[in-house]
Image (cartoon, rainbow, N blue to C red; front, side):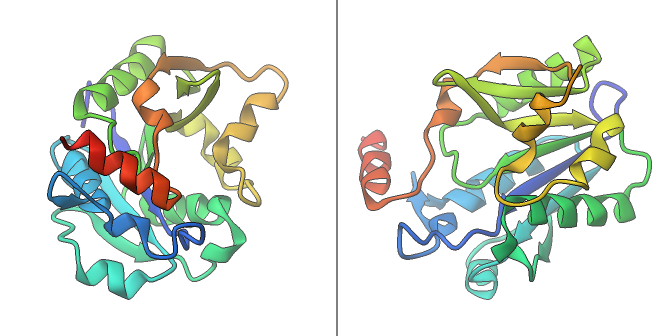
Length: 201
């Protein structure tokens, strides 16, 4: 529980890393796999449900990380896109904890996002009593993002690979944003991996 609110977290890590050619979840930054770093961040906060959604290369990834208090689930339909993993993860989350107030969605490869920034995102959501709070970077919004339980049914209706951002186009949809430029860097290509290695120096 955080701020007297029950919060679940989904780490989405089901993609195939097709542009990279090997699982980006296992790319190392400062001596740890990106996915391991994100799970340790999650384990350092007091969430009521912690779930990691794997898909492509699930067994390989699972064998090389230590989840701690994070429950690992495998989305067999990961090829359908990010929406599939969100819906699957939310269903499993609500099986664990039916009375959640909010759901936080994270990606495994946003290496520069910190625990303090995630806490700030959560605090903004709770203090503003918002339907959703998105990270804002490079003139756009996206994840990390947190959604109130009032939107869970909408999350379950998502389709394709657009994720939850498409909900902002719904008439009357109200949301908050937090400037989080660090979330703009993720790992999709070998150039990204090289940039990440330079950041270690």
